[in-house]
Image (tube, rainbow, N blue to C red):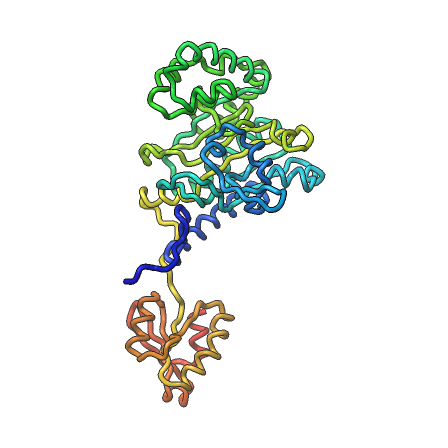
Length: 418
């Protein structure tokens, strides 16, 4: 086989016809579960102003430091979106969605782009789904976001998971904790990873996210933020736990859990699956009460989550979960001769209008080749059409699974299959 002249970009993968049904099935689940929670879909452009993304996700986050796909057009600077929380908040501010009244309950599905080294479950173009509640600081919003996230995974069929929970406090609590963390880390900073040393001044809490081996001994003994939460943050976190308990949602407090973005406050959470080995993260999110104002809106509380679709589909493969049914076509018209092909072409629309999926051979092949093609297409029935059938007005309807045949008019076929 000749080497193709053109190929897809490294880290950008074609979703081929054999794969697309499970993507559609997953998207359907997300749409249906979001509707049950009364969330509305939002779709934003894949390209955003560079300043929005850099401001929204913080200069020292992995997303920025690992490189993003950036473009220039005249004096304007753009990036392909690496995440969707900042774009959703930009849309909220730009279009004054707060004027719709109440909390805005939004969800999304779409592609993201990060110019990092491709790996299993994370390509340079990857897909996420997520949800945001903008306009409520009530712990109920936090718990509803978590419940929606979990419900989608349960609907998919993933039930063996663990919810990790933490509070990263409000700005006052965070500053107090950061100082305590710096005081603890500083004597051993030269022994820690280069990335952690860079994070030390800007946001030492991100050091708790480090996976570098040389950092782990210091992270394990680090102060925990719960000891530095003020009264408001403590009360909020206790309410979140209380509501989760009431819903029967199990969780584990992880004092070292911090979200990857700089704008998070209070609740932080992550969903993991012990069935997935080292790459166990399924989804994560938290509260980001500072972001709307930072992007130019009025101070507005918000909470949300995001999840990788590729990672979820890999989990389905590893857990032997089938999202999509086997592809079938209701009826395949097998044609013998030009008159039969003309008849089939004009009657295909009638079969489709009757609610059937229907197709025919496009190559003028032999009956044997057409029957083989119908079998490959997993056709439930074939209708055999030749000169004799056209003259008599009756056609051979063959049940491909049971090898039964009947001679019926076209109207009788539609009635039988409809």
